[in-house]
Length: 334
Image (cartoon, rainbow, N blue to C red; front, side, top):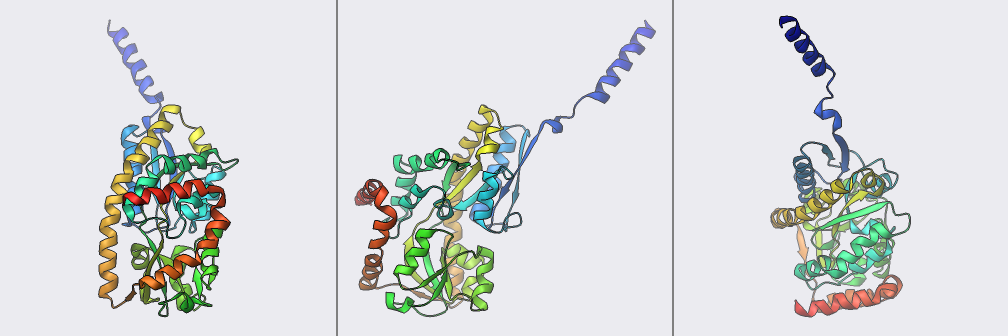
């Protein structure tokens, strides 16, 4: 009996020695974010990663790299998604437009009445249909998971601008998107692409560019308000953020895990919007307190800006005129 017990104990110990640790079954993926720690989208990225790990009981872990430490420019992160070397990234919708032109339909200048109007579109049939187009587009290699808030974008420059004529010849950093570059061209300025968010400040200081355009949080968070002290509150676009996944990486996961990741991304949207609203208010207060000159356009000047955008609608929105008309029609309720 004693010998039998000894043998059983030995077998049990051997089984423990050769058992596969639970951590060996975990899947580790990476998420790239150009914004710094504490920024609303960075906080949302971390919440997304936390929930994925929690609801898979640690089987899937997502490592979040903020501040552009993994990919300093959003187009580079998109390419990494396409070749399967990156799992996720949070980007502005603008660079996605180069791969999925339909995205331009939801980011046309002066399209939305306000934030509520935009969210009614993005979370409705129009926006969700366009989000699904990212995955369906030939050879995109991308999966659109959810929209996140990025407020409205306005120009910030090293000189005062009150009218379209004041923009003539100014070099303005724009997102890597053909439509956005054409937008400033129609306003008489020179669009400059290829400059990441973390490089705008130095390029303004060295006078490579005269300014850029972005929302309150980015203008403040990147310190750009210290280099370009005029914020022209024209609110020309409301370009949402998009949490993207790699099609190749998603295909490597089980159907259940893919569904869970999609579900969590949508759930985190509300959290990101809440964080955005807090940060937007704080950033505006900081910028104004620093003595920045905030210029609000007159009704006449705004009408001139909007009129200059009409060719843009013909050039980039012609194929999506029905969608754009539907978006404008929804604006009647706001």
